[in-house]
Structures are given as C-alpha cells and as structure tokens.
Length: 180
Image 1 (tube, one colour):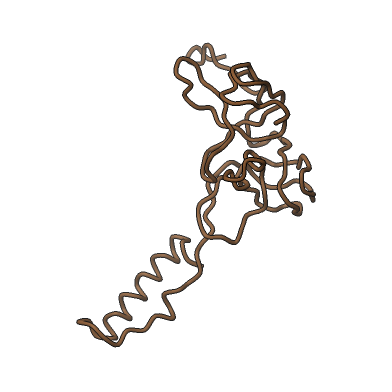
Image 2: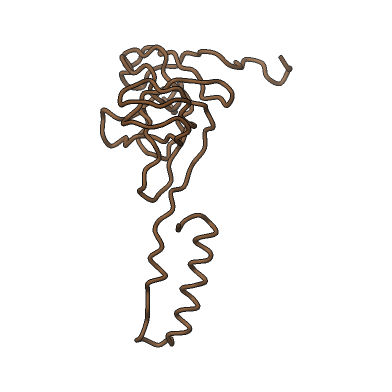
C-alpha cells in the first residue's frame, strides 16, 4: 500500500455503525452520514442521494452493520422494486415510501435527477436481489418539450421576439438534456 493511503481499505466488506435499524435490509443501498463522533449508515431519503454501499449484514440501531462498496467492475446484488430487464438503468426507488427505501427500480418517465448505482445484469422480478453492474452516477430524465407549443399575441414584446426567445431557450434546455 502506498504511504499516503495508511489506515484505508481497498475492496471488500467493512463495518459501520447503524444510524437506524438495518436488520433484514441485506441487499439495500445505504449512505454513510455524519453520526457526530462516528460515521453512520442510513437508508436513502432522496432519489438523488449518493448511496455508495450495499448492506450485507444489517443490524439494529447503534450496532455495526457490514456493507460493501458499489464499485465499477464488481457485480453486486440490490433489492428490486418492480420488474425489469437486463441492461435497464437502475435508480433509487421512492424513498418516501418506507418499504422502498434503499431498493432500486428501472428509470422512471418522471422528469428529474436520480442516483443510479448501475445497470441490471439480468431480468428481474419485484423483491428479487437483482445483479447489478455498477456505474454509480446521477442520471437526468428530461422533461417533455412544452415550449414549442407556446404562442404569444399580447404584451410588450412582439410575437417574433418572443418566438426567438422561446426557440433559444428550447435549444439550451435540449442541449443540457433537460428537455426531450
């Protein structure tokens, strides 16, 4: 190990304090958060949260749980919400639903940003531990184009001026992937 990497661990399982009960949560994504004096594991609370660990042995609140990192090149299994096919981009399931916190689902049609731990390595069914080929990243689901249909006939700006502004905004938003 390089001298700048003392007291670190590469690959494999590691233990962290459970910031909430993780008993029975094997295969769920979790985050490492600031627990005050020690780092803690928590299930995600937002679809954009970078959940870079999977529970392999969950325990009660304030007990150590084992996790493995979501690392490109190492296949992992994560609990699925819903069904999907091999090759599907996976994202956080709705963490607003308590039973779905830490699960993954196929990328939704609803516009927004989502954390994706990777791509499904097999077809899967609801509640299955689906094989995932990790490629952690934030993915953007663009909104529908609602600008093209806009027309303006009143106000201080002329129709052609407003149309030019609308078209310029549409080009920018499309280029950024915010509008499909």
